[in-house]
Image (cartoon, rainbow, N blue to C red; front, side, top):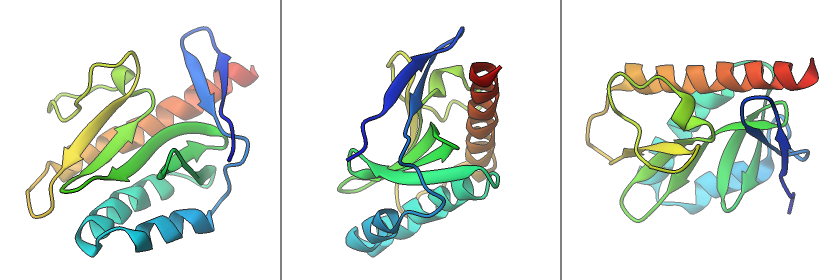
Length: 144
């Protein structure tokens, strides 16, 4: 299993995974192992992360799919007994005008999704896009 590197930037530490790849077979296997109802929900939102840009990479970390900009983690999905979390590694920095984000940690936040329950899809898509852009910016600052 890959060990993530924490490297400080002027703003916050980056959570980096040197083993992130364009498509990780372990991620596909993860989607097949969980219930179809939760799997479809998780895969749909992870698909949004995958489509953010050509520099998106992925891996399985701590038992769930993680999306990265190159090697910098920006999002993940995880399935529980009755819900799916769509999470963000720098979620505390995201603008969340619809109050979708949950969590009180220093950086991480997530959106809890229940099968069959509605969610503000436009707002969640915006959070994913913003997390991707934020990770790209942080990566650029680290490289400069």
